[in-house]
Length: 302
Image (cartoon, rainbow, N blue to C red):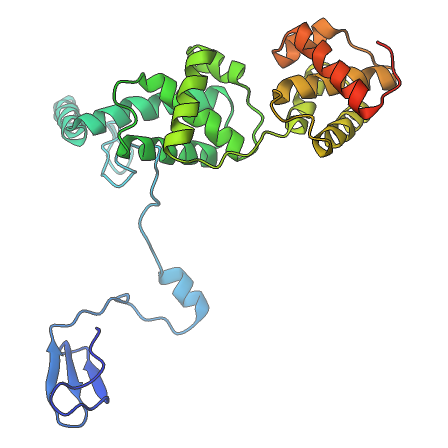
């Protein structure tokens, strides 16, 4: 209640009577407000343990669901509360209820769009092995794009793939465009185009991808030791300090660093082997290798 003083006498001694739902002036007895509501819980607790036991709340919001998880759902198990299978007649009733519940829940074009997009997002993210919090962040970003009307006239699957790529970059998760393209079935160029569009329209602050994020992943695939990984990361850090990665693909830089480090440690891998794992061309590795060798003053011949 925003009332802080009595409008009659100007007194500030206000008494709240929760039994009658009134605020009374302690000076003149005027009922300042009535029918007030108690926003607190309907229970009392006398210690911290009791408070923790009695406290309760609803389910958390889930952006991965079209209705954010706030709508009652009818499960598919066809069993009662005791786990006993319900009769065929009841099963038919529940089937009709589920069908109409689904139709009512997805009524507008936006709801239909979200139902399709979030199912696709879950499929692609699961294929890429992304955790639930990343899925939720991607779903929230997609909802922002829908709210700003950026989806109209565009392929839903390409926007979903672009959103996943953007979230992976923001959270520093090493997932390449090639991997996302393979998981979604959308061409890399189309995903890149949608990503740049969303990034510009939503003014996303996407940091430059650190090539060292990809080192462990590529090194594991190439069966390289921890020493090679350590030396690769050191080379990348030196390259970052000199500004050599600006305008360069992070996967190409990581692949070149691994290629150099593997030769230094004596676990040499061919350019083709490294290129196949990193998803780049041998030409890219050669170009990045020459740049790193020249700018970092590396004395190595490959």
